[in-house]
Length: 438
Image (cartoon, rainbow, N blue to C red; front, side, top):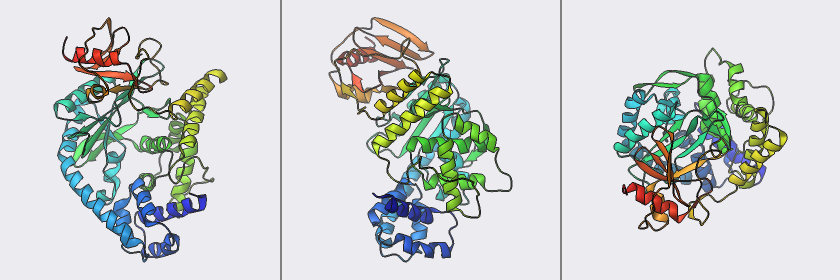
């Protein structure tokens, strides 16, 4: 799609998804909407997660395509109402148990209560953050015992910081992967950005979500998290602008110096500048931002090659900022470009499986852990092979090896680790052997 059309779709989504849009502002949207494809507009509204606000606004706009978009938005709203009804009890259970596991609520649900009408904030996944591996092990163990299943579309993954601390994300769903109505993402340690960047998670305050007292990020960290998430997605989202609008409303501004340094830590200053410029343009007179909006983030679907190149540039910049030489920074960029250009779906491979052993634990190697639902579907689970070595990487985290296979245990469960998606048949046999206690 050409840049002019992209801009028109963005302006339409921004106008329809804006909080507190006046009648005059909505009337002015008619010329912007003229000629737009209702199907594409619907997709862009959903991508920006502002379908509740857009449904209300479209009902007041005189545009020939409004009825087609409204019909789809109303069906989506009915589906979302049903999903939220099903998801609310297990989500509340996690919120009430969060303090037991040192878990803090981050991202969307942490910002929901800022909205004058919380229903206007899309309720998607429940994201929680825990400070260390033992907390993640305890929380995910409790979730598994409570009936949550491993997400097989976004596998659990782990990395290690430069000083050897585990970070990563474990994603779980209810009731299963076929038709999940609830999803919980457990983030461990710092927030991962791009291929190897990190946002420190050190600023917290007391808050409330769905009537439950919980710990949430402070304002400066929340702003930086929005920027980090936009860097990962590569797009400007109206949901993010609405979140920023509410975080920045009020007489006292944030500690902008700290926001800048948090964003600098993961290479997010360009994205921050663009988001703040877009915010000022969307809410004129309410937010001021000096400087233009660089084209770092897209206003529509991102071209895969551009995404890979952007993450390569980010990895290069991150390594240089950490004191790496030019050669090492370029290697990190090449790794990032390769990773974000590769087909990473799990598949059988005759290459000897590796795992996060010595020299294989870093920010630049993302070890995805394939759960039983995935590895058992890849190959023969009847073969048996015994482990030749077993090594504890952290409490409740063990690496087992056979001649060509590798398995990791998380608590009492067995996963096959992979970076590029390849799984040796012997890894499946070893996982099956260990799972049966043989």
